[in-house]
Structures are given as C-alpha cells and as structure tokens.
Length: 441
Ligand code: SF4
Ligand code: SF4
Image (cartoon, rainbow, N blue to C red; front, top):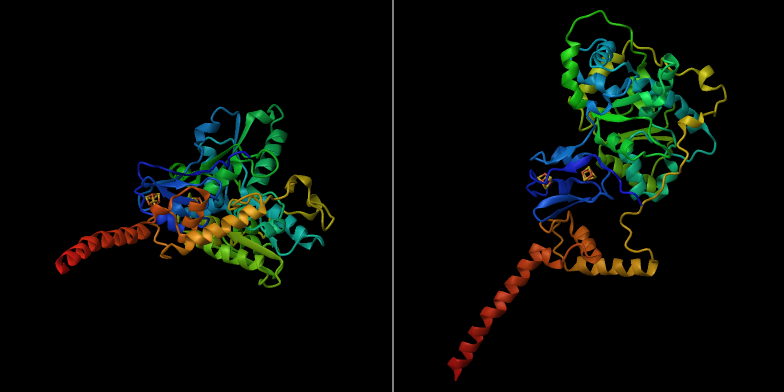
C-alpha cells in the first residue's frame, strides 16, 4: 500500500509534548513519544485541528509555493470562493481576479463556476433512482477520508462526483488549449488557492481514480498579502468574474445544500458535529433525508486553517458580495445535457470509495477477538483517568497500543506510582515487622 502524503506536519524543535493536540485529534492519530508529538500517518485525516490547538505553533500545513509553476508557459489561478471573503470592503470580485493576473497568472478560472456545475449534477445524482440515500457530499476531502477510515457502511453513500476544484482545473485547461492553439497540455499549470491543508493532500495523493488536474496548491494565507498589495492599485477593472450566488455560496456551510433545491437536507460543520452525524447515519437513528453536506471546519471552507479571516466575518462578507449576483452563471440545461439523469463521465469518480481499516487488530477473526480480549484485560488494570500522561489520548487507546506492542504498561504513570507506593510500603513494613519481632523476644 502506498503511504498517504500529508500536508499537516510537525516541527519537532517547537513541540513541547504538552498533549493539547493529543486530546484534540478526532482520529486519535497522535501520540507523545520521547517528549514530542508523533502523527500516525495512516490515521491522520488532515483536518488541521492540531494546527488550531497547538499553543507553540509546532504543527503546520505544508503547501506549494508559487515558484513551483514559474517555468510553465501558461499559469492559471483557481481561486476558491472563500478567498473573496478574506478582504474587507470588497465590492467587486474582479478586484481579486485582476489582482491574481497582476501577480503573474496568465488566466483565472473561478472554482465557484465549477461549483455551480457540480451543484447541477448533484441535483441529477440525488434524483437518480439507484442513488443510495442519504447522499453524502464528496466535496470536503477530510470527510471523505474520515468515512473511508471509520465508516465502512457509509462508503457507498458518498456521492461519486469530482469536487469543484478538480472540475475547475479540468475546464480551465480545456479553455486554455482552445484559446491558445499553440500551447500543449504540458505548457499549462493550474494553481488552486486553498483555504485548507486537506485539499493539498487530496492533490498530492491523486485522491480519486486518476491524476489530479491541479498542478499546485498554494495557501490562501501565503497569497493574501501579495494580493492586498496589488489590489490597492486603482485601475479600470475588466469584467472577469462569472460566478453566481450558488458558486459563491459553496464557501460556507449550507451553500452546497441550498443549491440542491430540495428541503430534505442537513448541513453540519465542525469535526465533532460531523462525527456525531456520521455515527447517527451509521447506527440507523437518522431522519429520512436525501442529502448531507458535511464540512470538517467550523463555518465550512471559510474556516480552513489556511484562511486568514474569522470564518463568520468572511461568511458575512460573502453574503453581501453575492446579494446582487444571478443565481447561477454557469449551469445551462442545454449544454449540461437535457436528460434529467445525465452526468458526463468527466465529472464522475469511477473508482469506489474503499474502506481502509486502520484499527484492525488482525486479519484472522479469531486472532482479532483474542486481541480485543487482551485490550479489555489491559484496560481493566488502568486508572480510567484519560490523563494523557502515558502519551496516548485515552486509557482505551493506551491499552490498544500495549496490545499492538507500541507501548509498555509501565508507561502508565498513575499505575507506576501506585506500584512504587506498594513497593515502598512493603519495603518499609519489613524492617518494622522484624524489629517488632526482635522486641518481643
Ligand atoms: S500541542 Fe501537540 S504539537 Fe503542540 S506542543 Fe503540544 S504536543 Fe507538541
Ligand atoms: S490533522 Fe487532524 S487527524 Fe491529523 S493529526 Fe492533526 S488533528 Fe489528528
């Protein structure tokens, strides 16, 4: 199995082993070993929660630099819709798009445009008689990875549609080749401006069945200040933006759902809320809904760890920005195909979402049952404090590590202290007992 490439990483020099991230990680991917955090790559979903919580800035998101595409003949910026919410008093999206051209891009293709197309095809997908309900959005890569690691029975509910970033990159490349017949595919580079590290990982791992059309992913916070510099220059603006309300709406929670034009949906955000929703769908105690939009970050993409602005302020700005826009500028029934269920192959993820059991104890069932019993036996000896001082987030996780051979029972400090106390007691008790016996002689 190829190793998953992550964008969330640790700076060991800065880490103090304080256990804050250990407690926060939703997939129990972190342990403290030798005084610093260690991330288990197979469990990490790149949610960025550890980046948010670390008081020492020891966790960071690794993204590309613009230099990565400097040698390409034709460079296309793909701004996420959340980028527009980062700027104060922005009354025209075109300021941002023009700014990107001024930074050296040859063209801009808004991801919001592709989002409108994905919304159109989502409506068709939900209406297909064979789609498994509730249909779960595939737009947030953290959610897709979480389901593939923890919720085997929900893998088939995940909508097999490419996310807007991928569609935008594909369309941008097609458009560039049409506009510039002297270019060939290898001359063109697409650069997604991302609010979150999970999208970096998505591209690095070619997360679906084929190589991503996105060539480089830069952090929104990296490009923000350069953009501010060029956007200040007053100049007549070209009419560049072609996004509508639906496309911009994707930046925050509820935007994707409201575009399905169907009331039977739920939109949730924040990793803890999302896990509760998934647990409920999984155990069958979920209402009869058709579509579920889940975003790992609070507020949706505007809350990504690579965004600059407070997500709720960004959302409020986007509401103002989209107020006078048409509902959609990109979905057109004629060009999208007249058939009510038609979705082009390019938009569909052909491979099935695979369950990757990271907590599997053994391939053999009898062996796995035995190990579960061993975990329970270790667990019963532990103090049940979930204190984290052993380097695992909970006593249960520690017992699992012990049985897997990744930790030793002696690393439970509470248990160790109790043992030392008992030893000391018996050592001191011995001479006292001896002297009492001598006195009585
Ligand atoms: S929060 Fe995690 S990464 Fe940050 S210092 Fe504490 S243990 Fe290290
Ligand atoms: S990015 Fe999320 S899943 Fe990965 S180690 Fe950090 S908190 Fe855990």
